[in-house]
Length: 321
Image (cartoon, rainbow, N blue to C red; front, top):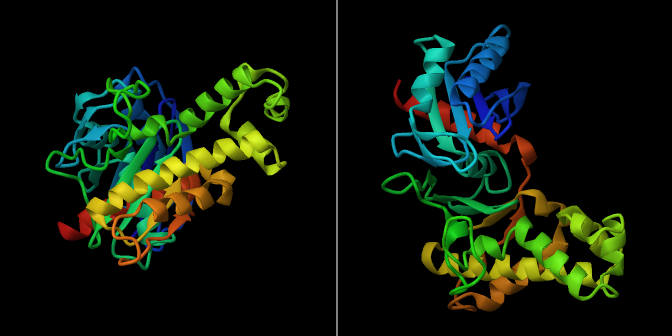
């Protein structure tokens, strides 16, 4: 049975028809206005109308960047879209105007994690943790084949585990959260700091950024490291070590079978994942007396939100007849 997945970003949506095998059969996009939730509802309805002219489906999954209620109908809060206790499933259903559709809302990291679990490198596992490392650090937890949402739907906000007391300030209002050390933003912050403090040693990195240290971005660090730049390699190694150290702490609590790492930093490959694996093993409790969970790269890329949201909506539809 086909289902539709919608990946809702701050300024655009990506909408796709997904088959039972996780393959996207058709995809379209629409621009949106994050300050106007109604425009997002209308854009989704318009995209669904386009796709329904060629495909039949009865389930729609909405991957939303925010806190989703446990009944998967409302977005309680979103940092980059004006959703505040917003009945997203109801509003989208009304905008589409079809009574036969099952509309399910899911946190975007959960949706991406489910895609990797169902169709990606964790498809043969029974439990996994997804680490989505981009501007921040998102996550998804699957245990015994089920997505862990928590009592209120707020589970797996792993980027806000506090790992350094009174550390770097975080956008959540606290200090020392894991995402302040294991994220693309953390990588860029440290790269810019190094460029300003050690301009001679940072010459290669600055050159990759076009000569202006203030414009350094994550891909510049990756490019410098790939070219053999010592500072670039050091920065990626440090990021990987933070990823692995935090994963070891998660294993002490959740004992997953596998870690899947997604997000923009995956482009660095083993330059990050290698140090992450080493730090994971060296910080793992009961080391030598337990299996070592592999840390692997995600495979679904930017399509993970669409595929995972559609798959979860299909499951909900099947469960409810």
